[in-house]
Length: 167
Length: 115
Image (tube, rainbow over all chains, first blue to last red; front, side, top):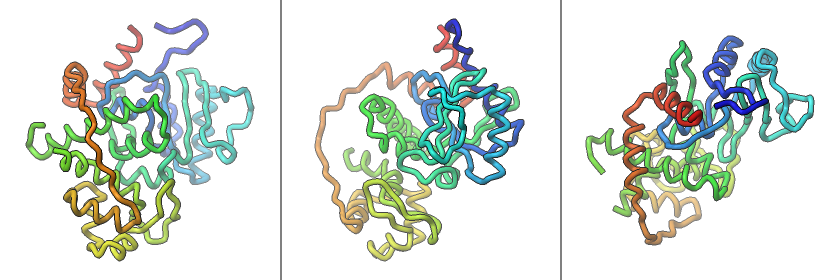
């Protein structure tokens, strides 16, 4: 149920806008964990964009389409002076993280990321379980402990399935 | 079992230690020295190709090998037994989700969220 004044969270719509502008990015954070199989709820999309100039120009076009505004009220959408750019859009929260904790950004995460089909013609690159655990652990936040435990368990179960064993 | 659990996270550990694919890559890591795969190979005496296989998760090192790698980087593994509380309900939900597609997981989460 949408709250008054808060846009309905539509991650597919956000991904479609990014894809229309041909933005290269990897999905991280809570939504990526859900896509990898953890049991949690999330309200936003977190992405790591490729930091090439052309890609950032495309990202800016997508953000215009989504009417993205910084949640701290500042106007600039530059990624050079922030660790995380937190935006409100017509379709829900969007966080842009140039270099997530514990990683070196897009090129680092791209190696192990997988492309997943989410329906409605949308296919996105999602950070691997190992990289998601690495980022979550690097944040060192107590509130992330359950998610970190689930990621480790997901990795264990996937490994047991892959090896034909039952844990 | 303890050994299996530690070995399960060997890939994360290798990455945390800073093994990188590109020799010329920027060498910055949080809380650990940054190493290329070649650096780690020289320090540990292990073949670089083997380190690459560990990093890509195609095979996992044994616990003893993992400890050697960690020590080659100037760290040690501190092991401790802690109580293990099996959340059977959570475990069942997790297993059910893993047999769904990412598309299905997303829609289930959104449905749950809107409930």
